[in-house]
Length: 285
Image (tube, rainbow, N blue to C red; front, top):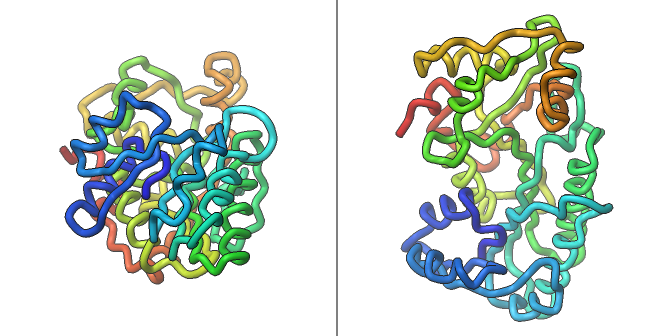
């Protein structure tokens, strides 16, 4: 069962099609036909309405949870509602939760491994930490193999907004090298494959960084993309100037620097990346 069956969820469905019976939770009746066209059984329910989730209990042997927390408030009541419903009858064998690398906060360019203490700097990352704790507690309490995937920037040429083209064409500035931050990426198809691998190979209550091998600062990433697309490289500005030009959301991504280590993902999930660097994935059709 896929909970939060958006772009990545549909890629998971494509990877699993013909191998297992697929179900997906949706709160929108308008998506029923689309999900059925993918060979997915739609289940109507809403993570913000816990009573509507009771029918999920005992339906699936494996669950992938990709739905984000609410956009405001403390904690993640959606994840708590889901695991409560899953416990009503026979619990699934495994549960995979898609979290965010933002839980690490600013590592000042240091390497982030899964045992590093979380240090979220934003409310949205704090809500993800709460969701991670809920998922891991559920695993310990029920014996379900619960895996948490810490996911950085997702990209793919066939994903809406999945490449830097639009931003490059808008000439959105990036930070000068002295102020720049390390950023991390994963191709959407490799992320879907990591979700599937974690369902069967993830260790109990285990955290996995799910990122490619790219080691680039953000400005260098946009320079690379510009060169690949034959576009002009973005202008470089100092941080003080960026604070007057960019949105708070963009600035938040430019305030955290880390290099994620994916050794555990490769070793335990046996995942061989199809797109090991952004240079191999940005031009793939």
